Length: 446
Image (cartoon, rainbow, N blue to C red; front, side):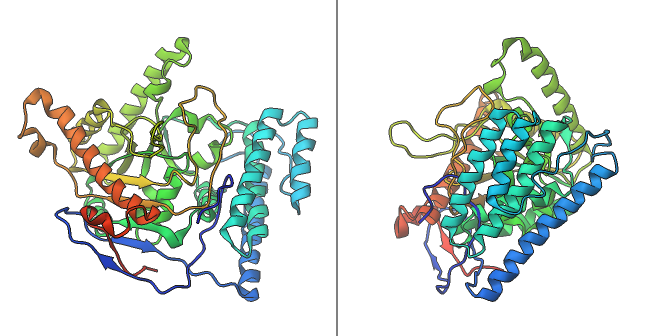
């Protein structure tokens, strides 16, 4: 069972023996791997884990202090004097009272402080629901670092370039995101489908080829969740994937520190292009610059790019409450295809399905305002990739004028099929009736 409380955090483990079953199907999809992490409830393990998280907190704080004292941040800009209110907190009470202190001092806007406190409460509740015996220390450690970096960005806002490369030093924002989101995933009930294809992709990247993953999109944390599901089996992909990101995750103050740890190509979503009409032209020009950056990156080869082809997050059906991948924008798919074809480097397009909405569901409706309410649960997640789909093969079977839409539809159909497999595996709604999906749950991997 998942927590119904907001914001979650820690993958526990199952003590039951692993099981496997396979279901025959005409589908070409191949096995799913069940992610399995084993958790001990012994006092020794609890002490070790608690010590580990406090060490990580101390390390992050030391790196930040070193960064501040050097007089520059990772971008090379001069920095303002940074308040150490949160890094000095040693309890929940001190951490939350620090919010009031920063608001009273005029260093933190009240609305941002309110959002930070809401996230803290949600995060804490979800971590406790995970059953992790070290939950108290995990919450305090991770939320201390998060509070400190949220405040830091208010004091000295980070500005993203069209192509943003993950900041790994002197503070490692990539690992900050991994450590923060990891406890939100129930790894006992998480799956990776067709793992062999990720190994195939790694080989293509080594050969200098480019790979584009055409995917659905469900939460603000998708890039981190994908990296967490692949960090053991395919660490190179997990750390080097480039994500096409909308402007909201690089402008929302509670998202920015997590975005700073990912490789991003920053674009303005079509869904928000005209939220402020007078800014529409600026947004179009910015998107043109980002496309040029992407073209340059692909010319260099060995790049793996993830794009949400619908242009936004999936939403549940308003009548059935069922979640499903949002329809793809055929123009977005075609733009990526043409960029790959014109890069001068071999390229491949794979359909990728992601199921993780339970962890951080988006608002039911698309919102214009920045600063959405974040309700999240501790839950399993799933990722599945299907064999690459060739545009020439699709185009050969239809009229030239129909090829663009047919290709987008073929990718969408593949993602939808895999999504249904993930839903059956994680939510267990169909159980053994999932034969049309070709599910095979095998022995967990380490």
